Length: 58
Image (cartoon, rainbow, N blue to C red; front, side, top):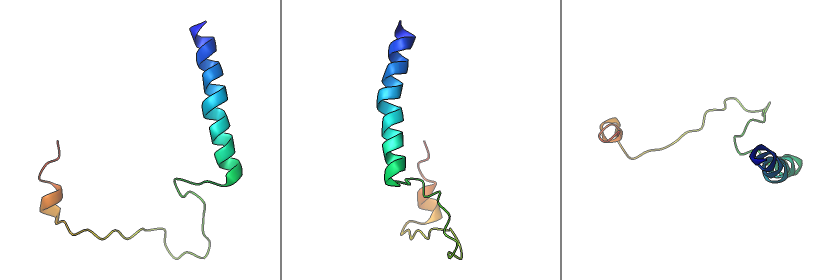
């Protein structure tokens, strides 16, 4: 019985949200190709140095 409710919950919530997002053209991972783009690299400017980013890893 628990699997049934989990399946119903998945279909009603997750699947419908995904279908609505797809119908609206939402692309959160930016997976759509842009033929005119020279590169897909995103420049990120950071004021921190490499030593600062490695200071506290865990």
